[in-house]
Image (cartoon, rainbow, N blue to C red; front, side, top):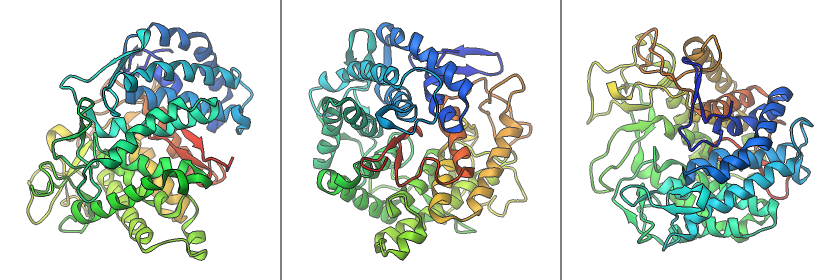
Length: 476
């Protein structure tokens, strides 16, 4: 209790995220949504007693990870515990203001990443105890990291009444709007010194992913005022998704799985049929962007879907199938961290997932260094969103298969779940680590996949990239 992450095999804790008790904070709103009052009480009291001291005494943290996990977790706990006349699902644990005041203290220190930088692009690392900030080694920031802070800082400005948080975070988006792009796609590195993109690596996997997610979600969060304030984000999202469909989407052979590849050397360079598991956030984001969280049936009936929306919804469904098949082709039924796809131009034999009964075993290539599983949430996140939007029962069936594989191969009898070294062999060797996002995201999304659609409805809440729900303005 109180460590960032659990080591379930050795029954120890480890502080890999700066020592802010990340698992406690990340898991708290999951417990609130599930109605686990004892857990809520224990976690809430730990936050009340210890977290402020940790924030004021600790050293270096990553701006992005701390914002999405700790600040995001505190802010959703604030709302779900009744703050801002929130849902008030639970009366256990501290008063909502404890979460808000702790969030403000943390955010005030994180702001130094913005105010220390010579441009609108924040530095990547913050020293909490003295509120100083500096760039990462090499000087560059990840595009996804600087553009995945806005939901959290905007919501903090809304509930605290202090506009400074949202203003600093939105400067990033306003600046990126002015930078050159390739059909809406952006390179995965950006310089806080110059404010310019660096390199020509275009991908929706690591360092690129949540930039595209927050374009649409920050716009959605604005609710009824979204068209006037942040319409440019919606326009950037639409352009980017056209670019994805045109430049990055391909089909595998022999069975035609639709996947999103990479352009590591720019639009003039060669295409790579590599897809991180992280890219599996995209089906859910595409579906949300298309219907704005209401059901497809209602959106069709009310004639709300444009041709673009229908294209994106179709791509969402196709990609969700591919993401599920990344699980089904392996012996363990769990996905690797990275997959490659067999195409006309690319094939490497002998690198399959080990499940010879899967019809897609020849479409998906899994290299030796990519066979680990970190308990990631992206596929079940998209299954949850697509089930809510389409009502198609297959998304629940796929989610249940994935859940059963997690139970079978990652559950540790003495408590917790563990990452795996190689999903293609049985029994898979276990890594002694449970990422905070397993409780914060993976299990939350699995729970919501099977919960009633009135629990955290998608037309009233937007989830940050760590699965912390924030209310959409004017709806809750």
